[in-house]
Length: 255
Image (tube, rainbow, N blue to C red; front, side):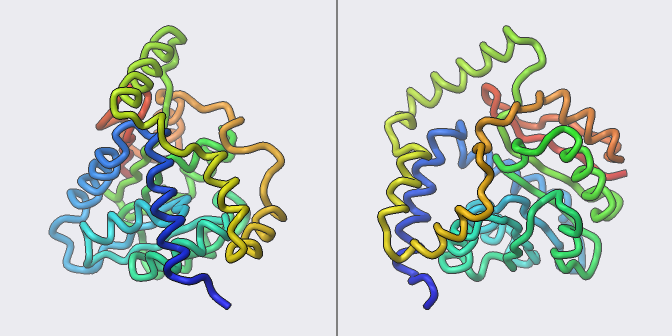
């Protein structure tokens, strides 16, 4: 028996609220990503093809679908619970694919029938090691058409320790003013999910593949390190186009 729409709606709504704790000006960041994709794909006569990497419950895919209703969106994730929430609550936003980004054969699992116009991601790729991230960037450069774009929104610290501390403080104070830190947090959301019997099978499946250490334990690469890896991967231009504290939107254009 599939997940009910009512249950999916409830948990996606709670997800959207708890994520506001972690992404400063989250809606602005989504809007900027959509602005970039819309700009890059403007004037194309065929349907733009966009892949959303680490889509979770479809937050970014749904917003892109509203902005670009003529686009074909492929949304990728490995988390069975989040992916099922997306498929149930946001079924029309994208074609959802279950695969592990960076593992052998993951790009074939996408089932693409033409070069990508854009690849997007938000708060999803920071768990990859530098080597794995560089490999994924090179693979994306192959998948994208010349002039295509990769757009990534995430917390990307400065190289300088003091500047990184100041940027983190700026973001934290912004969150405090917006009362975002009073919202449900990541741990509490997952604890509540575990109490819902309708999600028990999906949660059990998730425990099978879930790494022992969470994504937040990963060492986050700096903004400069991401830009360097993107340029080495074949993106002719790369840099931040929006930033608040250490929350950034990085754009890389394929040569």
